[in-house]
Length: 121
Image (tube, rainbow, N blue to C red; front, side, top):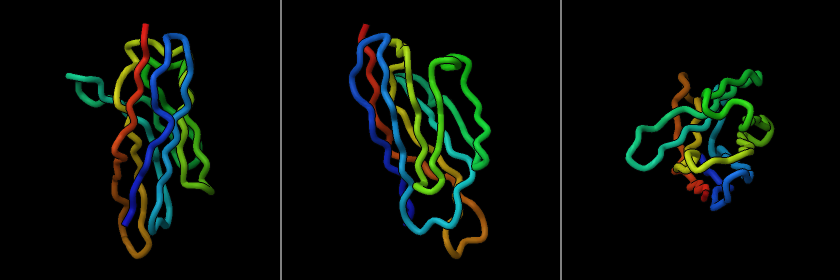
């Protein structure tokens, strides 16, 4: 079994900061790309930021310059540092990872259950 667990969400005032973490646990051989996605109420899930195993990153235009994605490969953990948060950043943030389990021949995509981020004005 493999699972992803997010932490670090909460309520913050506009202009504040939060740091999300997502740990992958289980029978993991390797992890390829990891990323953060978010889904606001009544909207579709959208990509926030992604990072490859080598550390290459991509960001949604709406968060460039405010959010930073990073990962600790030794801990199978990905982070999202969110600064200058705005009310429009309010959403459930989900972790995503492409990973290869021990004994498997192909990587599969996994999602975490999500953590709520609420930004008040």
